[in-house]
Image 1 (cartoon, rainbow, N blue to C red):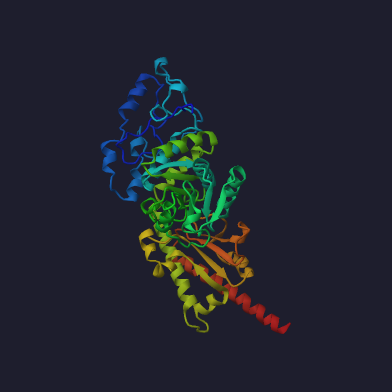
Image 2 (spheres, rainbow, N blue to C red):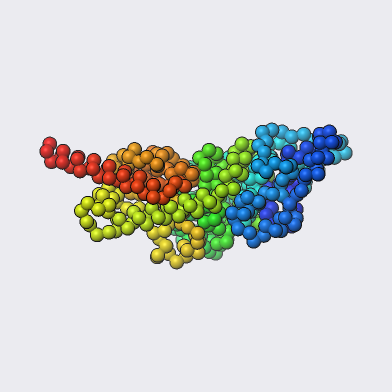
Length: 457
């Protein structure tokens, strides 16, 4: 394969290597000498001693400083670079033709389908947070497509979860003849090079599956484990520590966190250098890269990842515990439990599995995720509840700072029509609780009126 021009890689001793991350394109190589001297005097790469100082630091610290080694100007906030193409070296003797270029050492950005300053910085942060080597894509489904193109399995074991993932799998079945196996298939159905696709926590229910268990199953047959950890972002879950071979995120959700960007992420373990570069080369031709603005938004978002996600997860746990307690309480006319039980059938969330799943506390030690599902007693109630709420926007997607609720049948044709997916935001938990209770009370009152009218009709 003809080598592609790339940008300067991180020093090999840097603990958080990213996608051959270069000094930002804001480092001018074609400016008058006076300005160049000013910029170079301020260029303090942190890949060496400063990079070492980050080893062992908390994720909240890495989210702020994991890209410091890319700083090449005095800006505290990274700049947005909008150029799609970049100048070659000014000196003729510095030009290297593509046939002789080494993608792992060539200096400077060339074309934004290959690398760009904002996505490179985002990948540096993601690599540190995910404890692997990360690449970004235009969306979560673009990332899954890229993973299947590269791994090219003959068989894929996959369970329930995000319907979009099954759409991508269907495309690969059409193109390659890949067989689709259920997630709970016997281990003997898997062979070397096959892929187990594990989504945990699950969309839309918020329930969790054991990463370690499926890693053992896959590896016992020479298969690979790909974990979609979208609902368990960094700070809640570390799939590599539990045996994952590839980790995927729809960065649109918690990594972006503000409902204003599309992003997909693939990460591989640091020892899988050939996988990283293979995925990178194929991305150049698939063309499914992020835009520069989305890369800039992603960096902004990751700075507050831990603050957002842990608050959201904690609030979701409190809301689930409150609802579960009301649904399980002894009947007492007029109390909150009676109102909730009249309209709500059940709820699901990973926190409710914890008492009977000892592996879960080790897999998600800092919280069980900000998403849970509510099954109403009828599809009509599920259709109406979102309109009775003030703080939960009725919209698809999840992971933003605002709380969302979705009658899931609106976007997933295979979903139970009684199910509502709840994505908890960063609002005060007590306000969200009161909003839900008001909504349940409104529905219960409507049901009572309908019952009375039915009796008199």
